[in-house]
Amino acid sequence: MKTFLALIGMFGSLSLLSIGGGNTVLPDMHLQAVTGHHWLTNSQFADIFSISQAAPGPSILIVALVGYAAGLGTFGVAGGILGGVLATIAMVVPAAGLMYVITLSWQKAQKSKLRYAVEKGFAPLTVGLILASSLVMSRAADHDWRAYLITGIATLIFVRTKTNPLIVVGAAALLGYVGFV
Image (cartoon, rainbow, N blue to C red; front, side, top):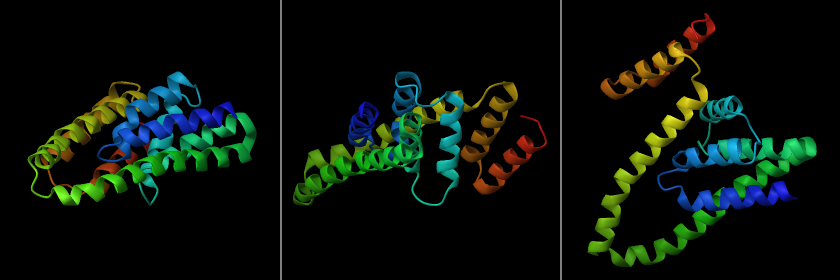
């Protein structure tokens, strides 16, 4: 029961901090799930992040996988499923409820200077949160200079060109397959 309450508390609070999407809270999710509760290792967290990004659907799928891992360690497969469901509900419901309440008054403040300032302030905040997430995931997944080199080259390609991301991901996968990483 303690694990499930910890999942609800963790993802309920992360839900309210996920400005710009679920990936913006990855650093704190990683810190709590790996370092704080020891539900996963660094490598496992990187693996489930990869799975959640590769799977069709919202990127928030990582929440269900973290919940599954936490519950699995305590109560087996049934606990894993319950952990995944509880974590997902805890991540979605608080943010959705808050957005509903804010939307009711947000529409009334159409020409407000405060609304304009808040909207302009969220863009750099979200970019910073996403950059922090990228750094945490890079540290969790990359283990030697070759992996860091691939990450750096892929980042440069994404930032400097309009290359289809599938080509870059495919090339990185090929390098992993042939044993470069």
